[in-house]
Every structure is written in C-alpha cells, then in structure tokens.
Length: 109
Image 1: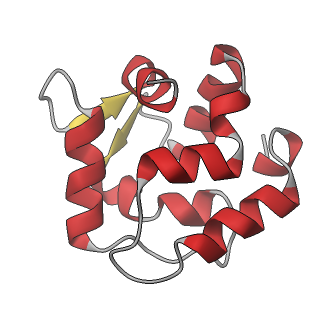
Image 2 (image 1 turned 90 degrees about the vertical axis):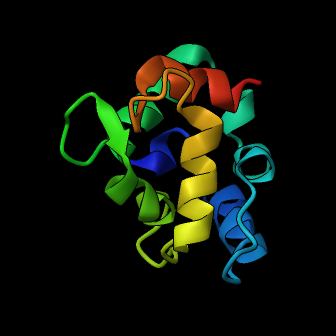
C-alpha cells in the first residue's frame, strides 16, 4: 500500500523538507509532521508493512537507513548516527530490529 493512500502528499513533502539536512532527523517530530501520530494503530501497522521492504516482519537497521525513501522516492538516506538513534528509540526488546508493535508504540508515544 502506498503511503499516499494513508498520508497527505503535502504532509509528506513538509516532513521531508523539514528533515532534509543530514543529522536533522527526529522521529517524534517527523511522525507528527508527516501525520503518522494521527493514524489509527491499524493504519500505523500498514505503514510499518510498507517500510518493511523484505517483508520479514521487522524493520532492520539497513531498512531503517532508507526509511525516508519509504515515504517518497526523493527522501534522503538517514546518516549512521540517525539510524542508530532511531533504532535505539524503537528497539525495546534489544534484538537489533523494530517489530510491528515496537513501531506502533514509538509512533504513539
């Protein structure tokens, strides 16, 4: 499912513009600006599935680096620092990847 079916194009553009500079990414602000926080838990899980490129049931560190491209093809790659900070914030069970429930909890924290 495409992000544009769940989120507004203008919100996606605004969020990507706000975090276009390296090391500027803040997941809490991004989720708010892009409109994820306003989505139901079920719709957040649909977003998770779109970001889980290999359909493993988890967003691994390598997928996380490209998370902004999941919202728009011209989204930038996260830096290693941003990727590790995002993973640390979401990975509550310490397995090195983000599960669907961890993602939903992170969006709605």
